Each structure stands twice: as structure tokens, then as C-alpha cells.
Length: 187
Image (cartoon, rainbow, N blue to C red; front, top):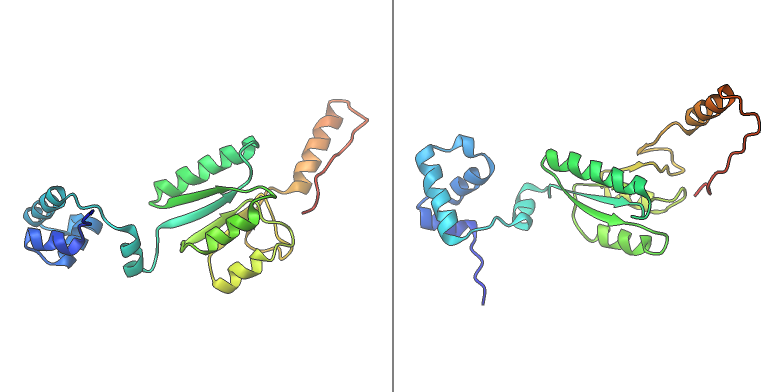
């Protein structure tokens, strides 16, 4: 049987209040050095590991962002996922990453909605996806990148019209006259 040590156990062992243990874990700079040392020694002796789930219940936030990225075979999603995770981690957030494909999006959406997170970033939402309305109803902060829903809200993407103009202008400047544009589905 595994015995999980709680912050109450640490407090009792160190001879301090549970609030002091919480302060040591969250704002150690506000704790007297002698008390900090006592609590840290108790944490070490008892092999205490803070419980993120318990902390999130108290604070009403998880410190977790979910990223639903596109498929790994596309280098764009590998690069953007890496950048998003690094950026969020540097700001103290953990990131749950899912790599979506047409085959597994519904399963991913269900998994994500069953888990409490502070926000969701999507790069795989469809243009008419009902998930958009569900997230708004649930009041989960979300943003889409490189994708846009028909509602035209909560998104960041490049200006495709300007990008098309720049690309075409570049090719014309190089002397090319026979141009062809191939686009993907609007979804």
C-alpha cells in the first residue's frame, strides 16, 4: 500500500500550519529563512510531492493549457507546437498536447472537455465546427491559430490575401507569366 503524504502531514512534521507549508510552496520569498528551512527539510524527509489536482481545486485554476495541434507528419505543426509549449512553459503553464487528424478529432474533443484546463488552443477546428459554440457556452477561454471558424472570432492567422499578393508579385517580378494557384478545402 502506498501512503501519499499531504501538506497537512508536512505541516505537522515541521510544526507549522498548513498555510505556512502552502506559502513555502507558492511564495517562499515571504517566509522567514528559519521556517522555510524547517518546512523544506520536512518535505525532503517525508518525500512530499505537491498535488496539482488539490492545488487547482483550491486556486480554481489548473495552470494547464490544452493544445490541439495538427498531425505530426506536417512540419508546420511540429514547429508551432514546440514554440507554443516553450512559450507557455516559460510562463509557468503546463501544456497537454493532442495531435488531431480527421479520424480522431471527436475523441480528442471529448477527452479535452472531460479535463479541467485554464484555456484551449486549437489549430485543427473545422470552419463550421460546433465545438466553437460548446466552448463559448462552457466559458472556456480558447483561441484558434492557423484556422478560423465561420464566426470569425477567437483566431490568429496570417493574412492569406496579402500573402497571395506578395507571392504573386514576387513571381511576376521574376518574369513568370503562367501562374497557377492550388488551394485546399475551405473546411
